[in-house]
Amino acid sequence: MPPSPWAGVPAEEFGDDDVTVTVDTLASGSFFGDRFRVEGILGVGGMGRVVHAHDFTTGLDVALKVLHRERAQDVESLERFRREAQILQALGHPGIVRILAMGAAPDGTPWIALELLRGETLKERLRREGPFSVAALAPIVAHLCDALTTAHDAGVVHRDLKPDNVLLPDGGAPPCKVLDFGLSRFTAGKTLTKAGAVLGTPRYMAPEQILSASSADLRVDVFAVGVMLFEMLSGRSPYPAEDMGQLLGCVMEGRVLSLAELRPDISPAVAAVVAQAMAKDANRRYPTAAALGQAFARAVGAPLGPPASAGARTPSRPTPTPGRGVPVPDGLLSAPAPGRSPAPSPAARTSAPSSPAPRAGRAAATFVALALALTVVVVVAALFGAGLRFAVEGRLPWSP
Image (cartoon, rainbow, N blue to C red; front, side, top):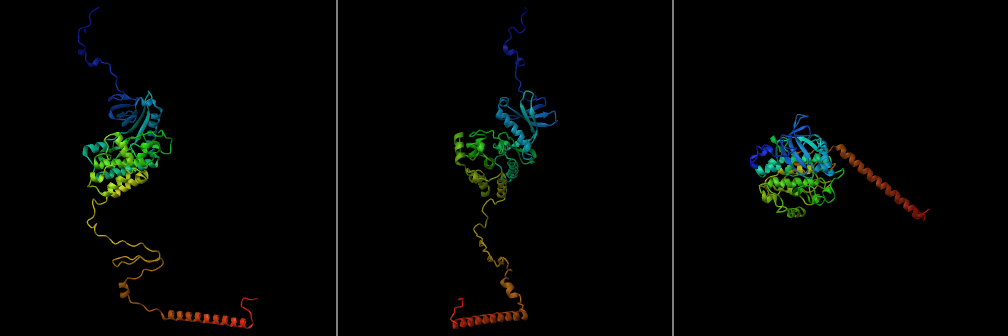
């Protein structure tokens, strides 16, 4: 037997080409599901991975979301994945990521094809540029709250809102897109969350969501937006916590830092809106995302500090009394009582000539008064005469 040509050659001389490797099914350049060519990884989460892929069926580049292989064996994970696709199909809002197709690979791995968005998340923008100005944040908040209103009106609660799940598209149109409805639920549908289970990202979870995700309503999304607003404006977490235990304690007890101290340049009205959105008691928060969006929009127009004339008090108007006019300072006319004509001002009284009443009217009034007086005299005389007659006959007027 002839000697091997590799006899005596050290192992390190062989090179890497001879090493057996396992190629990731979602590696860049690989093909998936007999339909997609993978271009690169966009993100990895607990449920699956999102890759940039080219769809040969439609000819479009898409964001392909694929469930982790081990998750694909779990009934609950499969149902959540299916429900996310169902929710995205039901929501047609420019501020919510759009679903293009869904299916399963030959090996059964489910996938969802979403519109491919170019841009950066709120978290990435915050890291790159620091805290937002109120003016820069205003259109994002308005669009985000409008998108959430559409979801809530359809009975969908996101339950995992955070800066990672809000994308700012290149060009700013639309101002933002809400991503990842993987933990969302239909409020009127079958719940997939066991009682007492905790789902979400703790820093953005409302106290009631930490206690039980299954009973949380749309106000947990309002709370999450409040936390995001605090972070976008201050550049830091609202909670003075150094570990998960302290964080949960801060959330449950409502212990938060002062936004006004961290950003003294913003108006108290804006700080108040953020504080109300983050209220520990759900009943003290804004009841809807729409209400939060409207409140923030009003606060953005508020002055940055007390007005120069803050020391001068304006006299308050008294509350109108039914049937009476309201006295108004500065010589303005009072409001007329119902059914009456407004009284003329003093100036009008002195300058307007008075016109005499017609003589015929005064004569008619005098005649009516005399007729009434004569009638009264006649009636009294008749009664007096009847009483005198009854007295003479020994009978009372009411006797038979």
